[in-house]
Amino acid sequence: MRSVAKRIRPGFSVVEVLAAIALISVAMIPLYQLQRALADAAFRLEQAAMTLEARENALAWLETVNPQLQPRGEVTVGGWLISWNAEPVATVPIARGYLGESIHAVGLYEVEVVVSRDGRSDRFTVRKIGWEQVRDPLGFIESEPTGPARRDG
Image 1 (cartoon, rainbow, N blue to C red):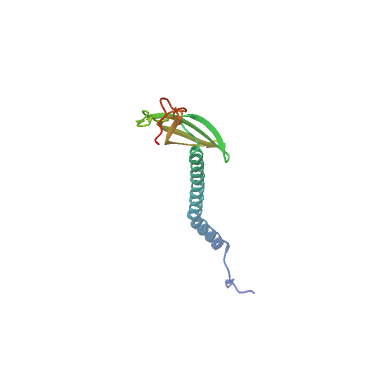
Image 2: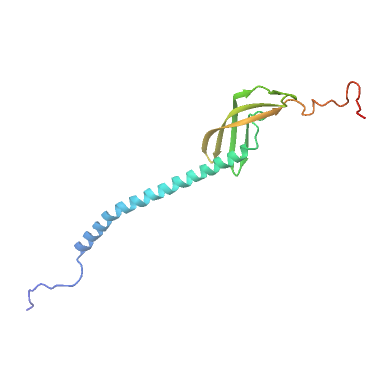
């Protein structure tokens, strides 16, 4: 007859394996949450970088715009639609000097800028100076002298 003695086998039992899997899965949950948080942060950082790039492109483009002559408009730059609307904040009266009045009218404008692409948009405002030539720069010079010509000899 065989011995009733219990046989001992080396290794893990099924219950021990299931318990180990349960412990590992519980320990992995915070790691997955951390990974998700890092992925979300990376996405937000990428969006912020794209928005910053769009603002820089818009500001560079607006350097070429004179808000007094072109108070509103839109243009596409690098895939971004840039639209602006300028409202006067202050105008400067035409200056008078010893040569007469200034040839430019100058004003300060608040420019509202909207940058949009793929359903996303960013809105910001900047202040710019606008100007317009209102007089001929050579208007104070007479083409022919009036009165007697004088010679010192």
